[in-house]
Amino acid sequence: MAYKLGIIGFGGMAGGYHVDTVLREDIPFEPVAAYDIDPNRLAYAKQRGLAAYDKLEDFFAHEGGFDLVLVATSNNYHCEMACRAMEAGFNVMSEKPVAMSSEELQKMIDTSERTGKLFTVHQNRRWDRDFVMIKKALEDGEIGKPYMIESRIQSPNGNGDMYNWRGMKDHGGGMLLDWGVHMLDQLCWLIKEPIKTVSANVFPLWSEEVDDYSKVIITFESGLVAHMEVVTYSPIALPRWMVYGDRGAMTMQDMGDAKVKIRRIKEDENTVIDVPAYIDHKVITRKQTRHNIKEFEELEVPEVVPNSDWGSVYKNIAGVLDGTEELIVKPCEVMRTFKVIEAAFKSAAEGVTVQF
Image (cartoon, rainbow, N blue to C red; front, side):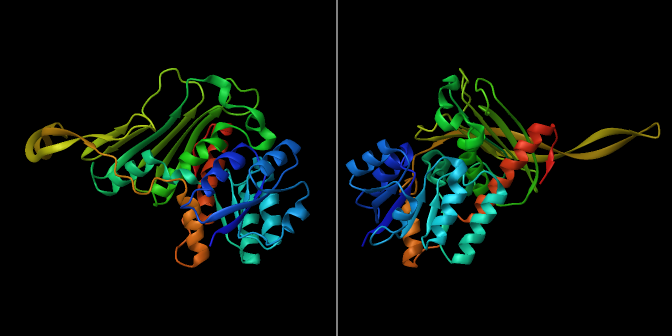
């Protein structure tokens, strides 16, 4: 049995990616209806076999109802539409970024708890192949204990990425809320320990009113540092991932790579040596441990990614509705990521490091 999907906001993501995904044979969802205020998008919804509505009340009254409503409007309407859908009795998945503020997100969470309806967010890049491979290599201890993780998306295209409402501040545009929310969600999901501080640079380079450059540095309780950078204009791009550990380092050049490249310690030893120290004008001897690396090895972790399919978002929700799975993208995790984003905007605006 296929679960019925209703869509609020039938723009490019909804009318393309989402519909194409749920129409796959292995995805237990069926897109049945769409609501939009643009007649052209409604006409396209009909072409794709969906019922089309230009009034939200009529959409909610669609015969047979929905098992899940996808909210895929511009960002500034996510909270309103998600809450109205839950109030109308439907489970909801919001596109990212989930809202315009943590206060809006809390309202969505409160509405979910009050109505008893499922609420989640389309953080589909938890299933990106590059991220899944890096995550697995870390979990397998390929480079020991990590102390620095660098995640970057860099484009040579200038302001070409900042179009339509994505270039409008009052619609929730900007790279930090577009790509950055995915990258920070990955980092916050990968590293479960408490966050100590957030510092950031967020500014427009080519854009007229929103950021098209952002760099966010997160320090965790153990001292592990995560560095996220997204920029729409970078003629020479650095690797998509660089991860440093106490036994080596690994890199992946871009999202299309099939392998993780690793250079790590193959053989080393610790020796204790005597070194001179000077205290109260006297020479004494202290013992120090010296770490000697005898040999490195280089290897490539081949592509073994059984869970790198964006359709897994819908499969997981179906499992939750079946009562057989736990929700993967939890609202509390989304809140943590959004708090990091707000701390980054505050750090950039005030030129301070924010205590998290």
